[in-house]
Image 1 (cartoon, rainbow, N blue to C red):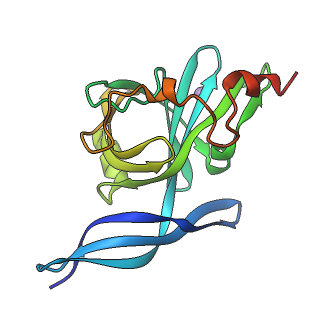
Image 2: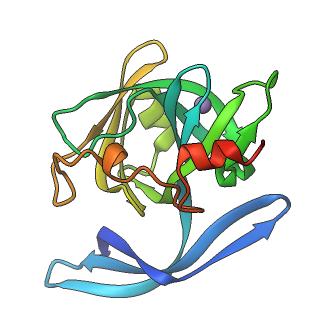
Image 3: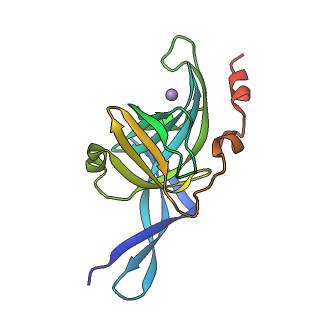
Length: 204
Ligand SMILES: [Mn+2]
């Protein structure tokens, strides 16, 4: 009987970031749980991780840019209120243009006159795992289910398109779901531990 993978968990601390041809990705050891029809078996595998990043962006209006690495770019949604850990809170997520992978590490000031001028904070980052292997089909269908393994965001999430470029970002019910206001309670950068005001002062 062929093994059927039911879930995997990245093992933190055993990962490295590789760079090649201007593209970087993270890989490391992962615990893969497989089911052979008998008891669950855990095995260790070397897998490539897909990056996710949330950048808090004070441009004309404040929003959180939610980005998922796919096919060599960062798929991007602008979330005005930011992600919520509460499954009852459906957060508007407006699809915006793909960004280069290298932009996912950016924190600082976008100068006046440039697109998106303002302050950018690396609010969260980590890896994501699609629930279905065919991400392109899920995006075309307008329903992408995935899990996040970040510093602030974890567990299962879904992006559902409801009209044109408008999607909803919703936390799924799991042990990471909560009524905590994650954006308010964890306002600092995962990169530098700075506030938006501290990052904004950098330029002056
Ligand atoms: Mn933005």
